[in-house]
Length: 112
Image (spheres, helix red, strand yellow):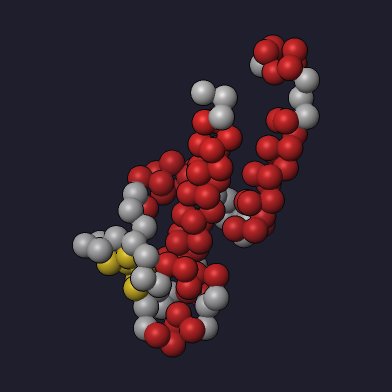
């Protein structure tokens, strides 16, 4: 069981990072050329759009099942305006939280 926890946490971080990329592609004004194919659960766009965006390229031919379910989970964590974060900010924050959790002595973990 102890070995499963880091693997699950890693998978959750990956899902959240991927969701943030897809969410940004579909919701930002500057990325309005992206669309969503509900049947294929896939981000769609013209070739010229894909060629001008490097980070989202991994989703060009890859379906992203559970996008709507992950949106329901993670949307509450998304800020707008001056508190908005990029995907890099989110990944960095997750990594910092993981380091902080690892550095807490065992007796303090049991109290929380």
